[in-house]
Image 1 (cartoon, rainbow, N blue to C red):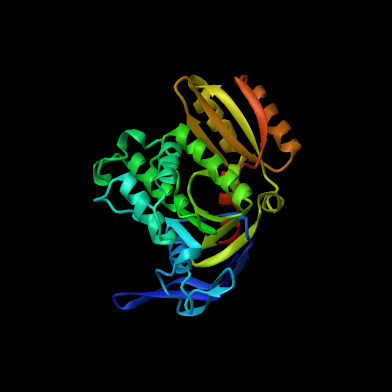
Image 2: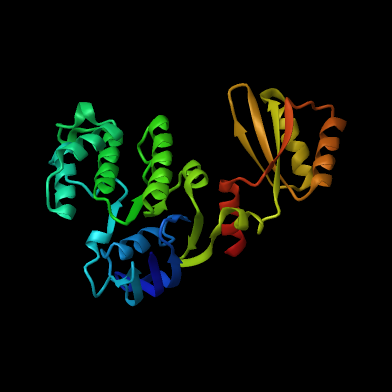
Length: 310
């Protein structure tokens, strides 16, 4: 379990002070997967560094499994991966890093377990290469493997899929979910990977300017936003005409450009607006490839909640 009680943290920048965290209070239960979202500078990294005892809060208390992090050694309770694989030693090999971090927490050798994680993270061909010589993806795999092998009750993963190829990122999603279910570990994630958020999160925390603006289950957060999206696919040659028509409606929309067609995503409040837009389009003799309605997805939900609270 993780608990923050009225935690604040301020940094000095030249002659000014920046309050990175503002009186945060929340609790994360054992076995939960919680994802922290927020814009750059929202306080995500400061929060997890306070949790890992890298930063000391100016005010408030942090508890890990009922231990006050400022009064107790909680190193054996938590393992972390920081963005850019900064939690590993770049002058060691993946095998040496795994051995070091396992022995640091457990005080003994376990070559069979090291081989197991080398295979899980597909590091066989590079296990004896110096980490600094590896690709970004291989460095990231090594960093995540080193966090998992420590077998701590709490895992903190800062941008865990950064640098990973699509196939292994999907494998990473499953590994996170299976680990939480099978071992009861608490997993805290910061990420911009919305596929990871959607597939693995129990609850989502949204930070803005050092404050928590929402912290709840995805389905409950979705109920706060009554927005659907009308998706219209249309050939590129008709795209400008459609854009002109939607502009006259006053509705909010975005456009994604593909090779042979464009996809419009239009905010609508109810089905009557869908009919209104569709009628307007067909009256202008514009015929889309397809029209569909989508409920708010996790990315649009996050943006909508963030903008709603600012």
